[in-house]
Length: 236
Length: 238
View 1 (tube, rainbow over the protein chains, first blue to last red):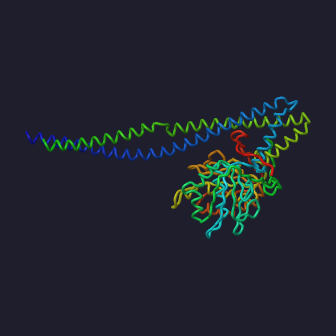
View 2: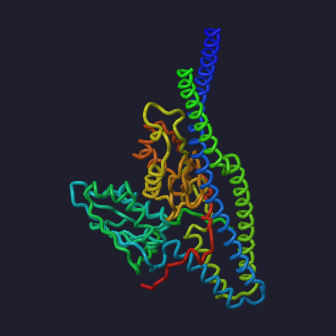
View 3: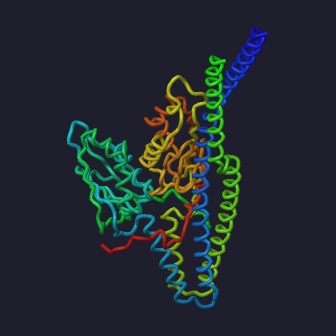
């Protein structure tokens, strides 16, 4: 009687333990798989969220531009006589486009970067390209290197120990002027593992100064830098 | 009975642990409860469609604007105004705000077909690959450049963003199609002999370059107002 009861009890406990064991193993597997799926999903979700934000801000800005154009069009409603508004509008457009092309000397706040090589490594075109691209990534509005304005056709070339920009030979120190948000640009250059850290490793001397008023000269307008001779405009 | 009691204690403790684990994973999922990737993909689709429509209406407005200017100029015989229109056209052309055509090259870049034994990172195209290529094209005298239809200007950003690259203000996945107008032979030779292209090919990244006798490169798309573009900038006469 006594042994029978104890046997049944042992059996019950063994069964319970067995089931428990299976459940724990199964649970462990599923938790592991869950976290893997979750991290994959998380990455995908954050990528998508970023894409959506980008697209949304683009759309808002497109809407803005549409409204602006509609206003401009309204200024031309009276085709018989163009008013002051219309001519002002056109002048403004011309000015903005010439600034974009780099054909106007511009002034604004920004970052002044003085770059010189102190060690054995010289500053090459790829270093300068990386710096310029870093500035572009932080929404820079205008850039010059030793007063050579960077435009759509500007190349950076290695010429002996020095660099050549817009077909002009430059000498060190390279003075890069960037008009835009000074803090944003400086932060992106100073990022951990960023370009400044790399330049320090190369023993380049880099000086950053946030300036209230930087003047960036226009590009030479003789067709040698901003070349358009092989382009035919297509009517809008 | 005493030894069974301690056994029960252990078994129940294990049961408790299992319950807690289960509860935690369920909680984690619940807490994340935010949108799933499928929902987000749908939302992205909607935004992209809205963007397409906005782009279309903007293009329509722009051509309407251009036609109106032309008509006013012709009707009026107002030389000052016509002069201004000509200045605007020239400035827009020089700034890359006008679509252009000419002869040149097309280069397509595509990630390696299958990753080899190096890190996956090495078989993917990065912004650091794109930047020197653009410089090579400029060195070879390219006058207009676009990547996947985005006109590349002096201040154009090319930034790696996950598996895509942000060009101007839109993201693009591979393949990347570069178009460049200039002297086709010079551009072709420059790219074929480019160190950057050589390195890309070393990593099995598929690079194809071909000469095109007639190419069209679209205009730079302005997002936001012209005024906003000029914020913080002041034109000075030297």
